[in-house]
Image (cartoon, rainbow, N blue to C red; front, side, top):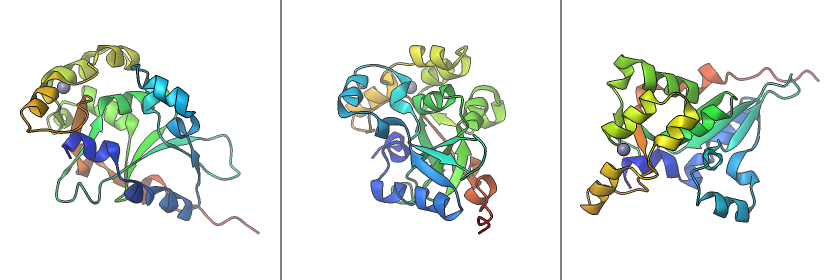
Length: 203
Ligand SMILES: [Zn+2]
C-alpha cells in the first residue's frame, strides 16, 4: 500500500486498540461521523467533495462533566507503517476536522496523538516544520498553505493529485491519490500527555 493509504485506510484490528485505550483512561467514547450516516447518504456523499465524508470517527468526553467534547480519528500505524518514520494523512481529513470547530485528535494504534489544529497551523505557517513534511506534490501543498480558509482549500484541491495519479500510472505508487501529506512521527505526543488517566469516580 502506498504511504497515503497507510494512515488513511487503516485496519480494523489496529484501529480497535484506540477506543479501549481511551476508555481504560476513564473517557467516554461514542461513534461519530460516517458511522452515524445511512448507507444511502454515505453513497451519495461519495460523489461530492463534501468534507462531511472526512469527519472524525469518534467523540470523546469526560463522563458526567460539563459540555466539553472532543473528536478522535483513529489511525493505523503499527503494522503497515512499521519501519517508516512518517505518517501520511489526506489534506481533506485535516480540513474536515477543522471545520467541525471541535478539538480533534488523530490517535494512532501506537497510542500517540496529534491534533488537527496543530497540523493545520504547522503545515501552513511554520516554515521549519513545513520543511520536514513531504506532500503528494508541491502544487497541492501550495494550495493547502495559501488558501484563505478550510473551505477555500477544499474547493481548490484537486479530487486526485495529478502527480500521484501519474506515479500510479507508472506503477510506482498506489492508493486513492486523494491529496495527502506525510509528516514525521516525532510530531506526535504520548497519549498520556493529551488524555491523562481520569480519577476514578467517587462511589
Ligand atoms: Zn498533489
